[in-house]
Length: 291
Ligand code: PLP
Image 1 (tube, rainbow, N blue to C red):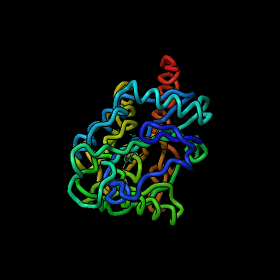
Image 2: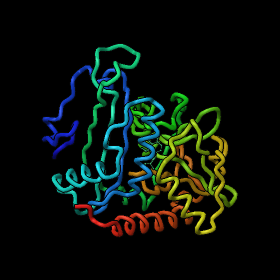
Image 3: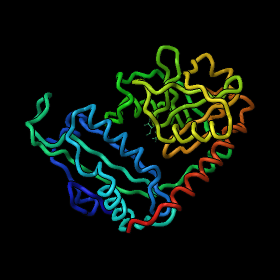
């Protein structure tokens, strides 16, 4: 497997960064994860726009990889040389503020950001989807800029670990009694005939999958209200599901060991999954190969 690091393609084991990289020292960076199907990236521009937004908000110099043509050529080479031109894969891109002596304030002007990318084989968890996943609830202890996709993921790591230790797939985070999102996916519910999910603000990541799923729901005339549901509402949900680059649309059928609705994947969730999957496949197939 190869990696891209600061303009070079290397065996992954040879792709190393200096210990004074601010990503290592401070978690001072942002990342993106794309889905790739048969060598083609899904929603390239929306992920790039989110990456550019994070860099802008954190005042990290924008590297070339934020340009569509540069990203496409890096992705093509990584996917090709990693043997991932067929089937499912992910592309990971990370940008940190670069290497400088450790001091909290920004490094001197001209410090070059570190840019890293790799492609990995991905297996969609379709067996879990068929029976539905379980989740736990946990306190959302993150900072107040969850709209930026930073590499500082400790609260998400701790939340996911707590879920794993209880045999659950995901942790649903609760802030002030309200459901925000999962450890690495947005959380949506079906309540009183409407799809409900946290609005886009500083408390959640603006998920690309969330955006696509809501567009599909609206096109199908399924009512959507971007208004958070509460922890207490969970017991009243007819359906609950995750939306994320690696979750696609994933039904949640149990939360804290209590069933959601019938305790099986709900009809709205599975309809949205079917439509989303078809859209993923057709939009990747429709793109002209850039190699
Ligand atoms: N929320 C969080 C905290 C995430 O980390 C992610 C993805 O990693 C998402 C939501 C879903 O975003 P996307 O659909 O763009 O993958």
